Image 1: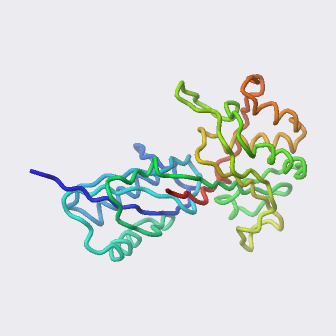
Image 2: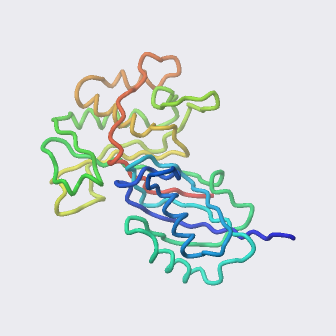
Image 3: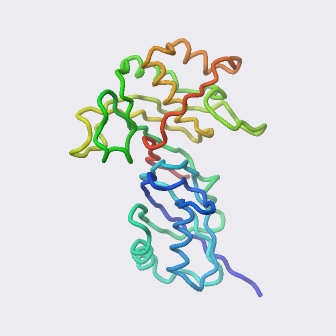
Length: 262
C-alpha cells in the first residue's frame, strides 16, 4: 500500500529553565519529549515523527525555534484549528507560534540560514530570584568596557576550535560570526530585573557545541582581568591550542532569539 506523507513547518518558543534541552531523553523533561507527547494527545490515531532545527542545552530558552512534522497518510484538515488545539495541550512554558505546510524538498536542517543568540546577564549584587530563568548573575565587578572590546574581536571569520567541546573529526572550526557585540540590555524588561543588565549578541550560520557559552565565559575572564584582548585574538587563530577555553558560562542566560530559513 502506498503511503503518502505530509510535511509541516512549525515555529515554537519555550522557557528552558525546568527543561533538559531539546533532545528527547529518558526520565527527564525535554522540549522534544513534551512536544511529542502533546502531539500524541492531539492526534491519537496519527502516525508521525518530528525533526527539530536546533538542539539547545538544558536550561537554554528560545524565543523562536522550529521543528518539522512528518505526518503519514492523512493531512491536517485545518491548520489554525490544529495550532489552537496544540497550544491548549502544550505545557505553559512551550508555545507554538505558527504552522505552514511545506513539501518534501524542504529540509529543516539544511535550509536553516542564520541563528541569532543572546546571552543575558547582570553583574554586581545578587539579583531577584525571579530573574534566574532568564539571565545569569555574576556577583562581581567586571570591566564591561573591556568585555565589549573583546566581544567585537569575535566578529568575522575565525577558527573557533578553542571554543567548543566534544570535538569530532568532522567538525568544521572555521566559522563566520555575522554579529558579535556586547551591549546594555534594552530588549528584555521586568520590574524585578536589576536596574542595569547586558546582552552578548552573536549571530552565525551555525555554532559548535557550547560555543556561545564558552565565548561568553571568555568575556567574563576578560572582565576579571584573567584574559586580555590579545589572548582573545590569539585564541581565534588555528595554531594556538594553549588557549583552549574551559569556562562555560551558565546556561540559563542563553536565549535562541531567531532562526532564519532559505
